[in-house]
Image 1 (tube, helix red, strand yellow):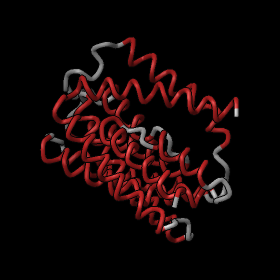
Image 2 (tube, one colour):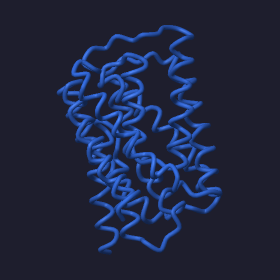
Image 3 (spheres, rainbow, N blue to C red):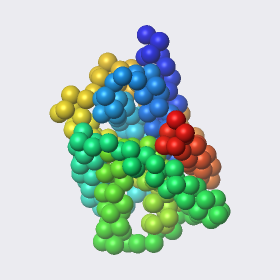
Length: 253
């Protein structure tokens, strides 16, 4: 009972953070691994996604009601994100992500420094591409980050947000809304793989799903109310925390 309470509370906070700027895995993934240290990593990742997809789905629904998105260009990208996630989850069942774990803090540090240095980054919504070009670039981002999400995962939402801001020219609010759509699809495809391999604890995922939706509801409302500036602030905070956590895991623990 205590174990379920711990991961349920972690899922609540993860849902809130993920709905605003991505990075909910910063909270929930370590909580699962520390609470169930003897479980297979793929099982914990599958249970994580089995819960997170509900909060992500709710956040996606709320965002798309209030934020105008270029659906014709983003839906093909979402399919590619799902394909990448499924492939990454399959690779995770075969090999360890230890090499990526050591590189991740450095990648996140570059994102953090760049975002701080560019104070105007993501404050205005000014897409750099239109039509087929936007669909192609968004698809490339979705495929790469989708693979990462299925294979490893921490910071996936933050990577989606940063790349949609930096490469596509979205503001942080539109980027966060788009990231939710991509994350919804990547989680769905990864779950399909984990289910086929028997790597989800449904009793744990169900409890975490309820609190994840509650946290997601609160986070989405705040993001929509306060806009791109608020999302940028939370994004910087989350990436900073991700740097510390991933560096500790890779080099000090």
